[in-house]
Image 1 (cartoon, one colour):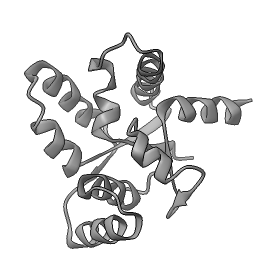
Image 2 (tube, helix red, strand yellow):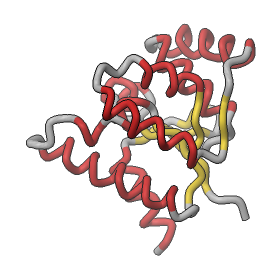
Image 3 (cartoon, helix red, strand yellow):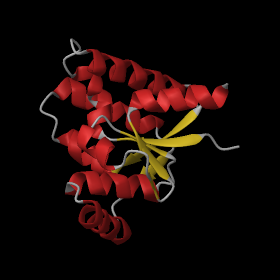
Image 4 (cartoon, helix red, strand yellow):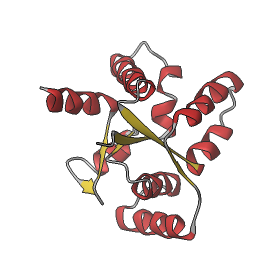
Length: 153
């Protein structure tokens, strides 16, 4: 059986570098680090995309950028730009009134066959609360860990 496939957007990947004095941010960081350990141990497959590369390239902090880029090597699925993804991104942007980058990340996750899209973007999470998008569940990393624990019990 193939492991579960997840997609982490850049706000999720960058969460450990945010101000950890806020309880929610600290919990999201811990959950994201747990998920990364599951990827390392091959219990979860990670999808990577041209959008993650693009947004990470804009990170002004060189150390953070390099650490995040290392995760690409552990990704089992690599999603490249295509007309299909660009079209799907435009469709998602228009239908759900979301930012173009978010729409493209979602299109990449769908194209990659992911079951979960992990984000800490509160706007995106509110927009897709309790909804599935083409088989993709959009969740906060803490919520994802809860779902994993529930499935394991």
